[in-house]
Image (cartoon, rainbow, N blue to C red):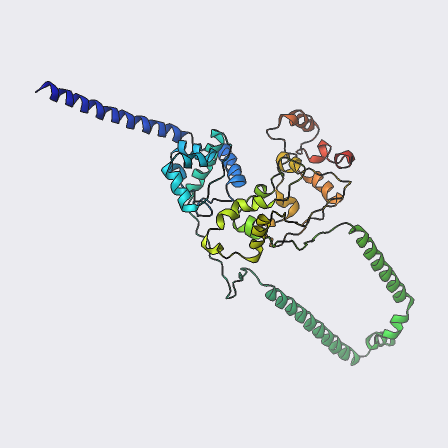
Length: 419
């Protein structure tokens, strides 16, 4: 064999062996990355919180929304690619990355860059993996009428009304039967030999005129009338400043049922200050356009409704949307959203009700002082993972076996809300 042939064989062998080592290295790195996808419940819970607060506006696990479905994304994309794309998707597109550019061509929108750490992104991927391992639940199709209205599944109000009418009819029949029984018994007793007292009882008749003129009836009627008037006046005084059920007409017919219910957009995505400031913030039009600038190109939005057109008009004319405030507290009361939501872990629905079911937002709770105090008396203090409360919890456990309530930490002090 010639020296040249031997050299070629050696070069081919070295090249194949190097490719094999490179493949083993890639598999090893991928395996190490795969191990970083945790199955720890706390990591998955953290990922779920981040996913619902930041991703649900555009993504679902098992269905396409503004962005692609994320089921099994950990097997379809390299972990390094996911980390880089989440942190700076525009940079990935500009670099010529084929997958990033293919996603942009398909969805015609650039994903928002998130300044998350690697651990935070991996916790989200861990949550997606945990959800992907679950079987896909087949959703029950909603029934719609010919005019497009959704048919409610459950007992309609008409059936309830029929049942009430039926109960009233049964009650009337029972009264008639009782009256007939009394007449039959009276006739039977009249045929018997009775003394004068017994016969007077059997033959007595109700004298409505004498009853109405009696002092007892007049006294009862006066007492009842006075009680009703006083109760009405007191109830009216207690409702001063209370606007439960208040649902003003808004400049745009925004539906929480569609956004928070159907599309499961987290409250914090629009109300950006709820976790970090006193006020929850009324979303500006640019927050609306984070989504509507993308879905504007979807076929069914080429002719937007008049309400959605108002959003585009506000952008074009640079005019703020003048939303009408629904929940109002008196100026003498101080309330901090971040203290309740971020520190206390209170869900939005606790005070605002099931907003994900409301087409028109309305005030759910009465938000009175008594309502707040009762909540402070009944709500357990969220002390887990907060070293500030360690000593307080220890002292409380020495005098009570009950968990610490908000009132045990000064939740009923006047200066907490009035200063």
